[in-house]
Amino acid sequence: MANPQEPLLEIKNLKKYFPVQRGFLQRTLGFVKAVDDVNLEVRAGETLGIVGESGSGKTTLGRCVTRLYEPTGGKILMRDGSQVLSVTDLKGQELKGFRRMAQTIFQDPYSSLNPRMNVLQTVGEPLLVNNIARGKELEQRVTETIVQVGLRVEHLQRYPHSFSGGQRQRIGIARALVLNPKVIVADEPVSALDVSIQAQILNLLLDLQQKYQLTYLFISHAMSVIRYVSDRIAVMYAGKLVELGSKKELLITPKHPYTETLLAAVPRTAQRRRGKRGVTPGEPPDLSNLPAGCVFVPRCKYAQEMCKTQAPELRMVGTDCWVSCHFAESLSLHGISGAAL
Ligand SMILES: Nc1ncnc2c1ncn2[C@@H]1O[C@H](COP(=O)(O)OP(=O)(O)OP(=O)(O)O)[C@@H](O)[C@H]1O
Ligand code: SF4
Ligand SMILES: [Mg+2]
Image (cartoon, rainbow, N blue to C red; front, side, top):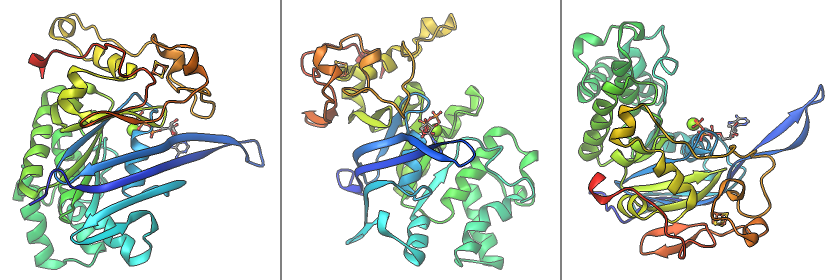
């Protein structure tokens, strides 16, 4: 059984910078700091929700964790039985082995599936590529997996175009599940789906987690989705982790002003009826030209003089809560009521 307190993944000072290139000679003018010095532990068997507005670095973080992106700096460690793998140093066969353990579910089931491959080929491909199964054995494993995600045997020979959005996402989940991974990065897995089927897919993911003791890094820009699925929540802003804590504590008593604005944007029932939704006021930051002090300064209504020059460190402010704000202890921020959890 997975021990929920034990870190499965340790992310240390992780950085991913993309060069900004211009002109015929593609000269490098600077860097977009998509992930900048992120420290984070992901515990075995938990769902760690990663939330933040568009461009805050969520996908880049997820792709570094699964080694789809090569980090610019930092380390990622992963526990595998009694072994600790240095994920960021893996090469060749070891990297291939790690990729089997760390799978991704993508946002858009329309573009992430090959239209020329049927379900058997799509879900069976990872088994073939990794030399795990072929022929009858492959078909049996694929069949077992698609049944787990709510599809049927008669779907095996059908192509993506003949499925609904929700069913296509089930195919994407089956493809991620078929290799028996330990950790799944689910990157906006319901954002492209109709609201009426989002809950079905979220519940499926939660059922599969229980059944196979999966660990999820669940990425979404929508706090309403994150609060539904997460055990703990990590809030990203401008490539940095600005708050990390248990779901309950972070939602009821947020400690970072940016988290407060995200919670204010969660549609309340009355607002939803009127079609009203809030967003964080102000302009999103330019990641290649961030302010010298706290990255949230230009949009923070609590900013003081020192915030302009001194960058706050992520520090522990409660039993299971980390925040990067100089005034985390003295601010009294608005969360959502406990009854709404
Ligand atoms: N391959 C790339 N090359 C250059 N810049 C990139 C690349 N991928 C991401 N970026 C930049 O890095 C920043 C973070 O992007 P990322 O996709 O990680 O954000 P996100 O939080 O997932 O946003 P969204 O909610 O829109 O998916 C953005 O400024 C983006 O433009
Ligand atoms: S450090 Fe200052 S600017 Fe940054 S979030 Fe806290 S109060 Fe706002
Ligand atoms: Mg993204």
